[in-house]
Amino acid sequence: MAAMTPTAPRADSAEAATGAAPARARRPRPRVWRGAVLALAGAYFLLPLAASFVFTVHVPGQGLTFEAYTELLGAEGFTRSLFLSLGLAAATIALSLLLAVPALVAVRIGSPRLRPVVEVMCMLPLVVPPIALVTGITTVLRWGPEYLSRTPLYQTFLAVQNPDFPVVLVLAYTVLALPFVYRSLDAGLRAVDVPTLVEAARSCGASWPHVVLRVLLPNLRASLAGAAFLTLALVLGEFTIASLLGFQPFAVWIVSISGAQARMSVAVSILSLLITWLLLLVLSRAGTNPTTVSAEPATSRKES
Amino acid sequence: MSAPTPTSPTTGTAGGTTLRRRRRGPRTWLAALPLIAFTGLCFGLPLGAIAFGAVTRTDPVTGATGLTGEHLARSLQGPYLDSLVGSVELSALTALLGGVLGVLIAQALVTSRSTALRSAALTASGVLANFGGVPLAFAFIATAGISGVVTQLADLTDLGWDLYSFTGLAVVYLYFLTPLMVLVIVPALDGLRPQWREAAQNNGATGRQFWRHVGLPVLAPSLLGGFVLLFGTAFAAHATAAALVGGSVPLVTLKIADALSGNVLTGQENVALALGLDMILIAGLVMAVYLPLQRRSARWLR
Image (cartoon, rainbow over all chains, first blue to last red; front, side):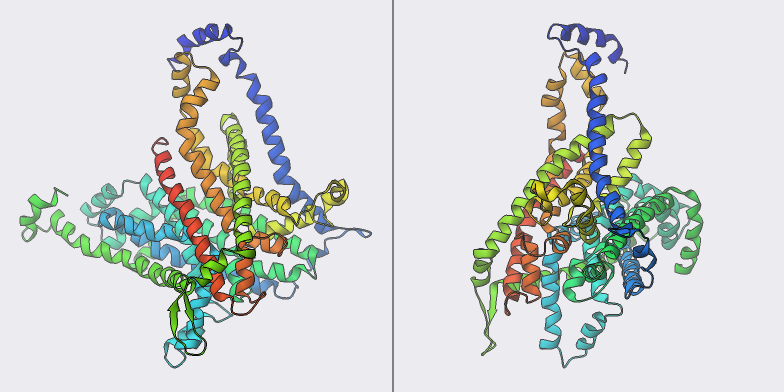
């Protein structure tokens, strides 16, 4: 900033010749420009939300009614599909973190040569669109009845496709979530000096589980929360894989009722946006709140 | 790597750092193993199945499997080629528009002095970027569909508006692509240090010259990377289009879904696999451009 003060007048005088003084002219111009951009963007992003809400509560010829929302809880399949989606989300978050956290921490503190391998493994799913992945999954699942029907592996194929809790979806979602989990955790680990923390904790006599659970993970709180949120949003909204494999979690259910109950499907869509919003707020709060550290010792004792 | 060498003779006597270092190697390697095994099984296996199914044909009578280019060739002609071209066009258009709009909004946010506005807009971007898929499609159907609120209020149909078309789909895609661009580009714009601008001004540069010679070159990798990311996202999107247009706009994701669920003809699975392979190749190309760009842009953002 020190350089700014003495030279600003010179910039002014130099520009005076061409008629545009940046230091003077820049101040008022962006305000109009910025306001216009933000107002237009706000209108574009808020209009569908407002209009959807009006659509759900205003029935032409009948006036205001909140039936779309009040009938929701009793709707056929609503709670079942919602709980299925939440269960899938919880399992996916647990699985992806259990896989990614040890691998990423290990790569940071002990096996740097594995790092490119882990990075490629985690980022590759970005290259495969969900719709392409699902073609592969259906092909693999078809091998079950075709080649394996006499082996015990066949039972695994059936169990994985149990419609009450399709494990195959958890596996597929974990694959889809890995890039986001990896990026979030990698950014978190980059912000922490992992080797120094580990050396310090080890010098103080901490055991390895203790180091990971009580030293490293608390430092990664924000990125763990971020990874969990991204995974949750991904699973709650996922439609492609579930619908093509023939399961009915939340997003598939919304589409299935849209023909008969258009109002309710829009109401659910708004609610799902609100839920995502709330979860993001809660998780970003959890990521920065220091009191959540107290939750750590319980897991640490159990593990060690 | 030089540190362990001099201390290794003491390993047996003093258990301190060296013992730990020696024991750490195999253990940490094991910690990465579940991840590698998992991706190998749950990602590698379907991927292998796609590649295998796309280039082989099993004779229904003899059961013999042989190599064939037939499926890939079929996936690149007729309606399948149209759908690939349609997908690429839609993705390129929406990525370009979303990129430009995202940069404008991000710049407005970065230069704004209200931190409350900035953090609120960034949170909103985080939510809206994830608000793709089915709920978004229904929100737009309620807004601008045939009996949508805005359609009826503003008589959009008379103006030639059709949500269930290429244009309509592009408008819907922009709803989640623009916030995504904002999220990607705000850190890059933050990384444009005021000192650089001051330095440029000290040397007598105009605003335009600053952007031409300093701002854009520094931002270029991020901008291109953002565009490529948006392209990949739009290209892979299926749920929004499936819930919105059904089949009226030719998109490769919709064609694959049709072929998989047997809506077109039976025996289309291998063509679906070949189309899947096409998509992976295009998306792979996109990512091969994106990741190095992202690494390059990260250099300036410290």
